Length: 119
Image (tube, rainbow, N blue to C red; front, side, top):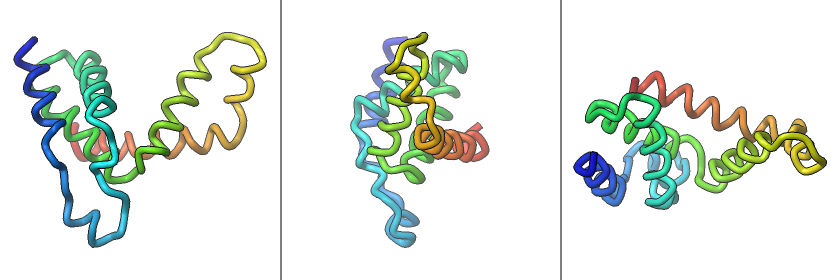
């Protein structure tokens, strides 16, 4: 397991440039912090069996998501999802509005594309 984490950290720390990002004018895949990438990959690996194959697929998945969704929008969606998990109360209700749903929808669409490309 320590080897898998070390490999994940090394892969995530490496630059991830994509020619199609430059050609299409989409955001840089490098605007995601290493911590955010590692957090995603570790959670993804946990759900997918923690194997070397899961490491490869989950690393691919965050790269695809990063090529579609700028980090600030990813971070917004992650925040909305975390806040929606709160049970009851005014604050939780504030994150169940149309704007929040649109933010989450964009992340779900990026995740669906990643699923097609990587899994």
